[in-house]
Length: 251
Image (cartoon, rainbow, N blue to C red; front, top):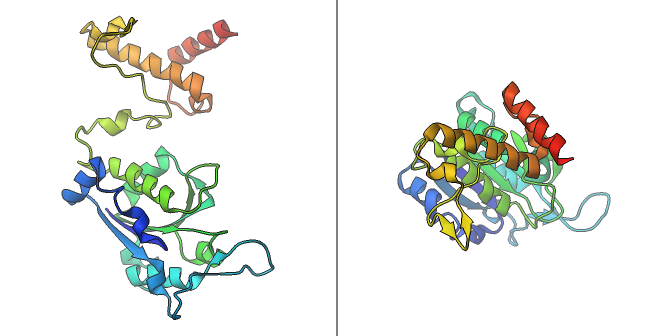
């Protein structure tokens, strides 16, 4: 997977990709990350990438020309041509579709290259969204100063799902949200800390009971913290009855 990051602040990405899983994936050739300065795709002497919005209003809007030139220099004049269908052109924007684990999985499965456009100021000229991109993505219902942090989050989330990126092939399967459930609680040594005990089942050595406990603990945690996910989760009839009982008893 290759990630091309288009930004007016390329220095923003100095450091975050040099640690942990991302660093190892880069060293092993699983991913490639290339940062591009959008100002280098301008032709005026001041390298202007923004201008005032038509119709008036506060702030500035990112101009379409540098963004189109940057993407076209990477993919050719027609980003949708047959030999580039495995490339995704993604605009990071508060108006985009919500990014989640399912979207990360789709990107990891469908694309071999992702071009991430980091918006700034009041937004990006709408012609970019209408005529250039394949996806418009938001990472949450809050406002950031630019698309650089969302781009980092997407690179991390997608990389984790690529073959051989994680030390264990089952790690991503059990991550929170992978099956519309939060992850189960984790414990490690010591078995007792300040009087707080690790659940006895986890040190019993009974793998079947451990698996059962973890599943139910994940269900309870999801019910308490993210009840909206429960309806999307793939639950057995017994699990739904068990959750209904917990809900009734808590009322």
